[in-house]
Image 1 (cartoon, rainbow, N blue to C red):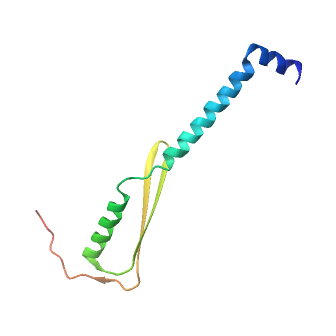
Image 2 (image 1 turned 45 degrees about the vertical axis):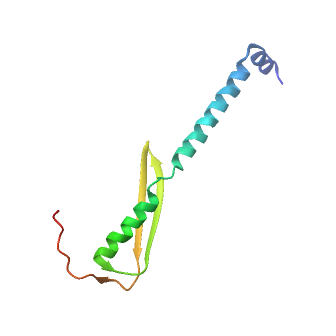
Image 3 (image 1 turned 90 degrees about the horizontal axis):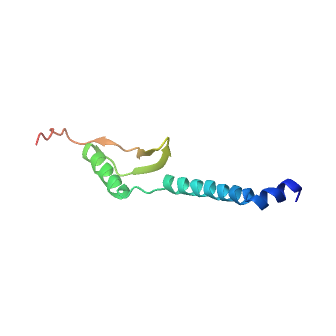
Length: 98
């Protein structure tokens, strides 16, 4: 420990620096937790997507992948839907105007 380190510790600056570091670490942990938030409606959303696809297509194999992220303070949800190879249109449907 050199003279400058001892002097800064004596006047309290070293403690302030470690407090600053702890504060920054806490900010990083909180930011990480916020990006890993789980949208509570995901199961309902997946079920609704499958129902809509089956309304218009006859398909047995539907895969839904979701990815949640946060960029520039905006929560983002990316949904990728894959259907199997044997896809057939359902009978012509009339639009429901109710």
